[in-house]
Image 1 (cartoon, one colour):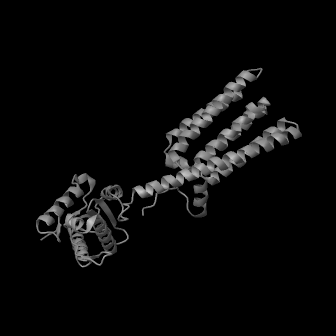
Image 2 (tube, rainbow, N blue to C red):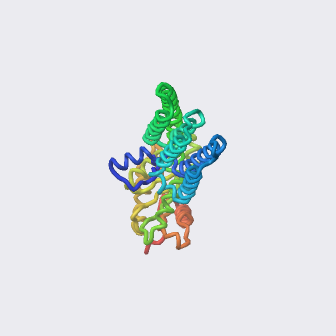
Image 3 (cartoon, rainbow, N blue to C red):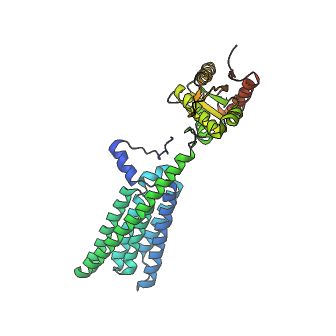
Length: 354
């Protein structure tokens, strides 16, 4: 079963594990929502201060707002993969700015403290557990600074404890929901790439692998398409369960003939494919002969004791670079049907010297 690829980071070892625990679940979404959330909070704080301060909005507030807008614009322009390891700094910056605005204004009431919730909500929604815990801890610390410096110690203790409890609840509840959602998405992505009957990868996975190989100059690779001979007769004689069993059996035979780097896929119906890596056209023809031979020598034994002889026809074609303009699927498919017209249970290979 193919595994969902994680975003690559420039870190390795324990540093890489730490960075990953602090990184977002979806880099692009986190990048956008971080900027949108903090800018919204900053602009709201800017307006509130202008409405509540006797002197109106001061120069420090204007400068802080301009700084946040500039940072947000810069972050949005960077590639998501570059931003991912550092995106946890965005809510931390937001917390620092909230403290910076609350202290000069002397606002330790609801209007000053409510904004501490915003970075926690964003972190629990977008970051993994390490990042969520870090932002939650920073929020509690920032809130403690504000209430201790601006409130009597009895009220500071009550307000700080209440907000800390709320922060923990938000972090745990939203973080758990985000983790469950991420796990479900990964499972759906994995299942979408695997044929449920044969366990082989699907055409989509094969297409991705083929496209990547064709983008490599002077690539040595080949595509082999295989079709189960007289599949309709198998279904008519042994029922659709017998036909399914034949497909599962042939898939297992092909997997047993392939190397770890090869990609074995079900194209649909009774058509299978093998993408051969580091294989010349001549070698691909030989490998395809091995596939046909192995299926011929491995009849299917059904639960009722019936023995069903099986055979496949195969078409092999070299994988030319994308710039060549040749579709390897079309070439291999034409070779496959040439093998069927020639009598089945054989290989027709393209690009092989006589």
